[in-house]
Image (tube, rainbow, N blue to C red; front, side, top):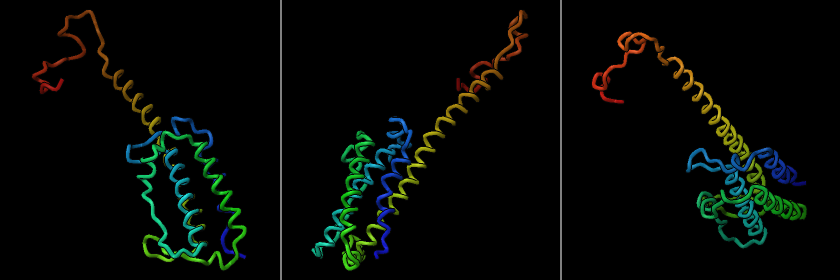
Length: 199
């Protein structure tokens, strides 16, 4: 029997579905900074990676002896305008690849699993290593999705806290107005020059 946990590979789709459950369209597309990925972009990257992994596995099984291709993940995501995509559509593609590869994996014998190719780093990798690595890669990005969700929620908490502090500061600096002449007012307002001109 193969040491590869095929079920763990198949389960990645469900895990991603659970990771984004209940998120609004705004949350799915929110980016903490322009340089960072949104949840939708993370999903698109994983679909892209699954495409590349699917090719690498088949190329190894075909004994082509060609160096396994690399891909620029950031340029793939930005070049496709991935954040304009739909999360459900992306997950549907991801699931189709998972299912199709699952059927392939069920046909492999031990010799197939041990077939190897050379990646772009010059490292020898077996089919079993690629599948296991992909599963771990998905788990890594699920943790990233969790961080994005937390960052989105924290910005709302920070905004609410800032608004509360602003209201509190405004109340604390309010002036009490009496019928006395302005000189007796409880608020002494210095001329602009006395305040350094920063008004």
